Amino acid sequence: MLNATNCYVCKTCNGKISTRDIDEGTTPFGIACKMEGCKGIMYSRFYRPMEGDPPVTFEWYRRRWQWFMSRMERDHHDKGGLFLRPAQVDMAAKAIEAAEGFRRGK
Ligand SMILES: [Zn+2]
Image 1: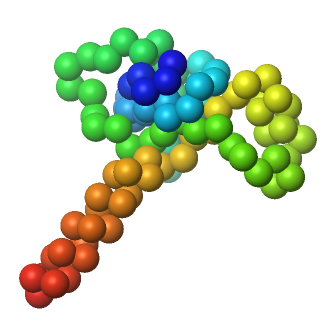
Image 2: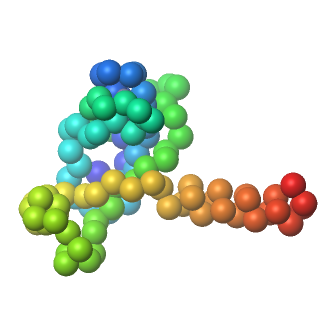
C-alpha cells in the first residue's frame, strides 16, 4: 500500500524492522531476517503498526532497470512485486547529520 508503514517480525530472534511502500505494488509475507547473524524469517504484520515499533529503516520500491534482474527477480517484478532496500531518506538524513557533525568538528 503506497506510503503505508508495515512491520516485519522475526519468529527466530524476535527482531523487528519497519518498512514503507514508496511505490505501488505487492510485498511478500515473509522476508529473510535483517538482524545480524540471524537466519530466520521475518513475517509481515499486514500494515498494522503497534506501539514500540522501530522507526522505518527499509523501503519497498519498484525497480526500473529490468535488465539487472535475475530470473526470479524478474518474475517477482512482472507480478507487480516491489523490492526492499534500506530507506534512502533515512540514509540521506544520516549523511547530512554526519556532514554537519564533521563541520562542527565532531
Ligand atoms: Zn531473526
